[in-house]
Length: 296
Image 1 (tube, rainbow, N blue to C red):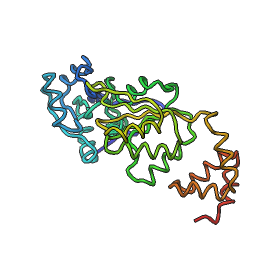
Image 2 (image 1 turned 120 degrees about the vertical axis):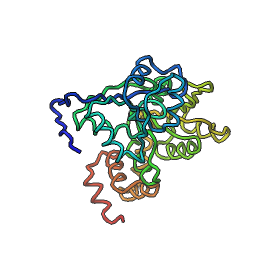
Image 3 (image 1 turned 60 degrees about the vertical axis):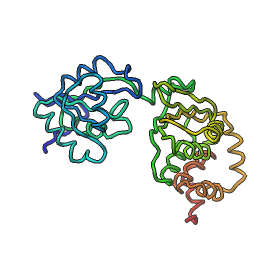
Image 4 (image 1 turned 90 degrees about the horizontal axis):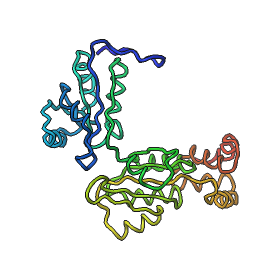
């Protein structure tokens, strides 16, 4: 399939092509569906849905009878180009995820990339989003934040990712399922120490709840109470005065080599451990690297 090269200097849109709409859907409460989203879903030629069975219930509620096709993580390689072909021939297509904004922690972002490359107009239809809803209600700093979504399934990759954010001053936003929330909180405690944290569950639904405290208090809470519902976790960034001096004093009692080894024993990759120790001690990374050449 031919794709127009994407030029960063200017958007070049394909004449007579259709529009790709990114349509937000409710994350729990059907009243969060917008008038505009209902209108567009009625007008487009086809709706590409993450789970057609789930989306069919939503369409039925709003009496929308537009044709549904599936577009998800397991068929995106084949289905993505098919959708682009539809757009090129003039069809308008709306993309929806199971809940919230498509493109956030789902393959909608891959389709947008293809559309931009092909010169297709992409139009967002704003609406409900779990990450931002939890963040603005958390009581933690919203000035600067990092969205990390679902952590990698691989344990080593999870530890490496968390280690890379250990000294970040930004508030962090995570998604997590009820059966993994306790393990994730334990890993966050191990990577960040105790920080202000909020667990938001069942957002916009009848049993919506915000559990505010610290990472440690959330660990205690979910030890005593079975987690239920999908969670959005908000964790405070590291403050410049938040035990940084104490941590640094403790680390500096160790040799550079021992400090790196201590971090590696928690699952942090060698290169990430070197970077962290260099930052903590105000040393060039090369100096720390040279001091740890014999570490396997």
